Structures are given as structure tokens and as C-alpha cells.
Length: 281
Image: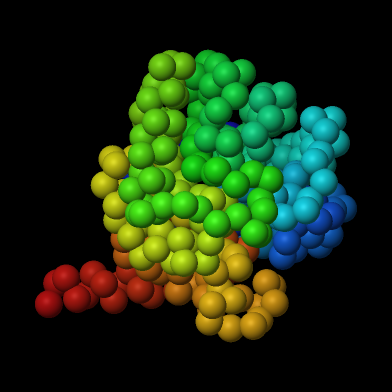
């Protein structure tokens, strides 16, 4: 591990930044950018230097229409860069691995990963046992639209209430598997079970997720809700991503998962200083 847990979420007063490192050829925004080991290492170094608290490594795309990846292929993508990062004393950030496959998660933890980011919400009993046994942090995401289908439209009277209910059910399942509350981080799953209106509602009401009593991660970076406000391609949605994550932070989000690390760190630290000044007036 790259940092002591005393340096992680529990000891910081600001919203932490999780920088995205997709070592995939087909992710929706940065697919193919970091498929070589050297380019991925350089990306990790830049994420860390920009002030990220966590680097989140992903080896399988969740974009609509993406092809499934085998355990072996995902490991071949993730493990080399993970091993390089965790052995690099110049990189201070914690390392998360974005996977729902227990075998990939186990190999990642063996290689030095600090936490698992599971889009399936720790649904797999084998993943539950792994997280319980290793006592590692785990992101428990609400996702009802996997693989992602852009034509999906949720039938709901209150999307936030529905997501809160499902997250609470997932927490109870994790507890029953022997996972302690202090291991869990909740993610409402922006883009993984809602349409544009639903995503905006989830972001606007982030405080209702923080009220569940667990750390909350929000990942809205470059996602399609931004098309409500502009026609920019995904890699140019910095403005909408910053706005979304500032709203999430104001609502109590503990971690934001982003592509544009330097811009997000600057925006968050500026906003947090201004919010504190307003409180102290």
C-alpha cells in the first residue's frame, strides 16, 4: 500500500479526488489512450502530481456496446500497471481497482491495491468473501442497467428514494457477508440506472445519500447528462463535470471520481475555501 490509512478518507476534511486511469482500448472518453505500460505509468504519475488522493485503475469498459473482457485479459491489462504504481515510492495516492470480478480483485489486492471499486455493488458472494476477509475498502455502487443500455428508462416516482433503498439493501447484504460498515463507500451510480433527468436529480440530491451514514463517492465525469447543456464531445465536458462534482461536494460527497484531475482539484479547493469563508462570516 502507498499510504497509511491515517492519511485516507477518515482524516481529511475536504472532498477527495479519485483520478481515472482506464487501461482499455474502448472506454467511452479515453479508450486507447493508456494501453501501453509506459503511457499508463505516466498517466498515473500525472494523476498523483495533480493532487489526486486515489488512482482508480479500470481494465474493462462499461460504455454502451462494449465487449465483455475475460478475467485473464483484464488481469493482463491491470496488473502490470498496478505493480508499477505500488512499487513507485514517488506516487503517494492510494490505488483502487475498478472491477466486479473476484479473481481480478484478489489478484489486484495481492499486487498492492488498497481498495476495490465494484460496479455490481458486491453482488457476487465470492467478492463479498474476499472483501470481508481482506478487510479492504470497497465501493458499493448502485447499478441496475448493466451492461449500459442508452435506451433504458427507469420507471420510478422518485429515483433518489429508489437508489437509497437499493443501496441500503446492498449494505445489509454486505453486513450479512461479514463486511464491516467502515469498509464501505456508497456510489449512487450516475449513468448506470438512470436517464439524463435521473442523473441530474441524483446529483442535485447528493445530501440524501450522505444521510445514509456512509462515505459517498460520486462519478459524474464527462457523462452523457452533460448533453442537456451542450453538444460537446465527451473529452471536452470539463465544465459540466466540474459543476456536477462541485454540487456533489456541496451535498457532502466524500470522493469524486474524475478524468480531469488538476481542474477538479483546483475547483474543489477554491470552492471549499469560499464555502468556509461564508460559514465564518
